[in-house]
Image 1 (cartoon, rainbow, N blue to C red):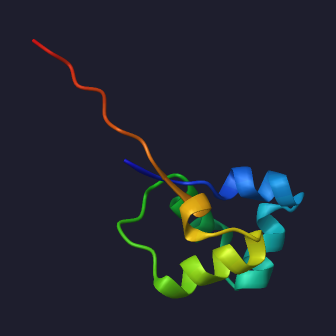
Image 2 (cartoon, rainbow, N blue to C red; image 1 turned 30 degrees about the vertical axis):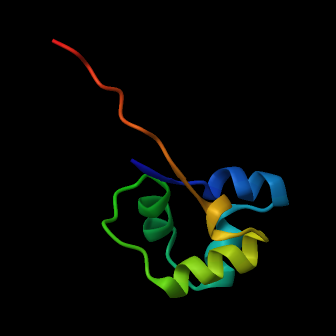
Length: 72
């Protein structure tokens, strides 16, 4: 599972989701959907803007959580 670390990066920069929405001209609903992983894609434009405003790299913006394997 791919996680988007927006909330962690906002805390690090001491910024709010409202601030980010204003800077990126994105609705809070869409931002929250990205944060919760409810979207199936994110445009390169948004990735670039997230990295610019959150002062991070794409590697810091995203993390991958390996699924736990359950043996029967």
